[in-house]
Image (cartoon, rainbow over all chains, first blue to last red; front, top):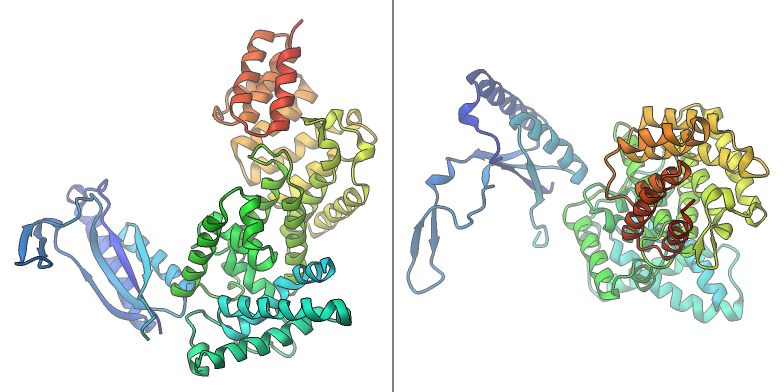
Length: 119
Length: 402
């Protein structure tokens, strides 16, 4: 079955630190429930939440020697906060699950298929 | 020759939709059908058009596709696995057979595609228009349009946009996305945003595609909004011959009603009656009903304005928008006078919409506030590219005075 990456983009306008703990807990519970549902429905491949963006190191070894830089390559205020890799029949199914995932994590989700050209 | 091309275009959507289902790939389907056209152009002028041209084209295109796939040494499994989803489920022997065109239009109008790409794909695959014709209709270079269509087809393949009728819980929203695409095509023809005032080709094409959709969606049960949209288009399009005179827009009250297409008006009225019987009102049906009132009676003076206002009230309740409120105000002006209407219009936040200023200008003019009226006409002129509309507005501006 084709796989899709569902990327969760952090929303720079939402301050999770300022959120009441009960709400944070609720988000975690909703995401856990979504993950369980995806596993039970046989959609699950892999998922992960990423550490804060400040923990990023950029490595560029396309020149003569590797260059290590503190921080992400892109200076965009929007960055990947976490992702799901799930398998679906088609885009309609992927969009339906992405809508549920977006509701659970209170954020925008980008749906992108894996390149199937080499299959 | 013209005959062959006419038949070809009429059958294009049906045949290509069947081929997409069979081969699971839009490009294979289109190439095969293009090959079949070459053969039709050779044979039909001599042998005559076959009694069932769609079946003939399907058969020839099928063979061509298989030849091509063999030539390219693509194995059966490979093309069966082509990235696009195919629905091989045989039709239920007792259930309705779904028209392949219905699946295809839902693919072309999928919400994951950008609106302009939905329009282009629909005209290409269901309308059978060439890329050059679509590019011309939307005044973009042919290479731009070709790229747009290629990219949209690539997304369908890579993201696996399915080729099937949406599930029941998605159907209403997906159907309204399809209707929105058809209405956009119609409106681009009817209220051209370009200098050309009316582009009949797009209006006729939108009507043809909506008829196609109505026919193809029969197995889904009555679709009152599809009927409503068809009625709306017919009632608007019927007035086309009277809408522009000597390059100047003619508004409804001043139109020569004898120039209207009476067959289309009759059909539109009869479709509106069908909608009323189905009793599941929706925005297109109500707009069609409003246009049925406008086309009822021997002249504009006979218009039943209280009926028009009542229909706009119903429309506002179902699909509220400032544009609906603006149109409602125009009807209110006929019932309760320009002062009441102006108060409604002035509350609307539509400053960048030319019709807002044109409506205000007309109301101000009727109230004898000529300086303000002229200024409002000026604003309206600055906001539209449509040549006939500009000419009409300029005429109104110049004649506004005591």
